[in-house]
Image (cartoon, rainbow, N blue to C red; front, side, top):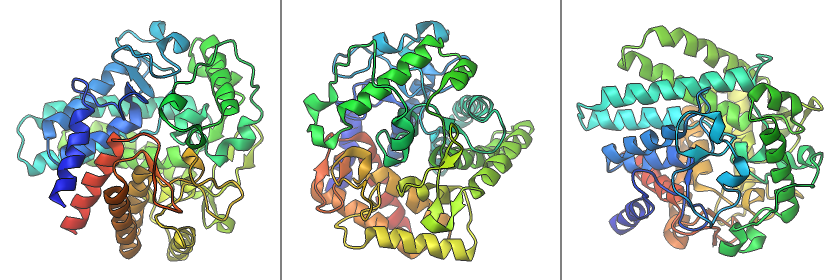
Length: 430
C-alpha cells in the first residue's frame, strides 16, 4: 500500500507549520504536546531531521520549572478556544512563544528513543548533540511530574484537569468532574463545533467545568503548589503514570548512549517508584488497572482504555496477562474495529462521542506496544492490522466509530497518519 504510505507522509508534510506540526488545520491550529511526540515518530520513518525538529520546536515552550505544556501557541489563530488570552501564562516562563498552563501525557521520552534508534540505523553523525539537548528537556519534565504531581511519593502522578489526561471527556472523570462548578468568568466561545458535529465532541456542560478549572489555576498564578492545594479535581491517573514510567525507562536506555551515566541512578529511582505505584492499581474485577480519586480516596471504577495502558510499562504475571488479554478480546467482540475507548457493554458507551467510545489509532499503538512487551504478539498483530485497515478504508480521521468503522472528528489528522506509518512499518518488519 505504497500509495497510502505516501498519503500518510503527505498529511504530516501538509500539516507542517514551519518545523512543527498541527494536529489538523482549523480544528487544532497550534502545536500539541503528545500529538507532536507521536508525529515525530511518524516523521522518523522517512525524515529523521524533521523528526528531531518536531521535538526541538516543542521544547521552545518548556517552562522554567520543567513543565512541558499541553499547547504551544507559535502563531496566532482564532479557530481554537481557549487561546492565549484565556490562559494568561506569559509571566510564568522566560521563553517565547506563549503556552497553555497545563500539561499532557509525557510521551516525549519514548518518542526521543524511537527517533534516536532510527537515526542510529541511518548512521546519522549529528544525533548525539541533538539527542542530548532533548534528553535533558525530557528529564526536567520527568522531575517536574514527580515533584509537583506526586508530592506524597506514592508512585502515581496526578492530573488536575481532564485535558491533561489527553482523554478529555472520558467516563473516568465523570464523578470527579461533577464536583466542579459550571460557573465561569470567561465567555465560552467554542470553535470546535464549527469544524466537527457536536455529537462527536464534549458537551457544553463539560466545557463549562473545563474552563472553571482553568480559571482556578490561573488565579493560582500557575504556581504548582497552590494549584495542588486548590484543585477540586485531582486524579492519580494510571494512563499518565504508565506513559511516564515507560518514557522513564526509555530515558534510562538512552543515557549510556549519550555518556550520561550520572543520570541513570536518578531515573532508576523514578522508575522503581512509578512501577510500584502502577502495580498497586490492578483490580481483578476490571481485569485491568484503574485510577484513584485523590479528593475522595476512592477507586474510579470505570472501564476505559486507560485500564490497558499500563501494559506499556509493566511485565505482568501469567495470570494477569491472560485476564487482560481476555478483557481486550471481550471489548473487541462484535466491533467493526477496536479497541473502543470505553467498554461497549458499559452504560457510558457512546460510539461517536470523542473519548466515550470511539477508537483512536494512537491508543491502539500504545496498547499493542504493551501487548508485545507482554508477549501477547498474536493479539497485538490483529489489533495493529485492524487499525491499519480502518485507516485505509475511512482515511486519516481523528478517531473511528467502533460499531461502523466510520471516520470521525477532524480529517487529515497528523497522529493518525503517524500511527499508520509506524504500525505498517512494524508489521512489515515483524
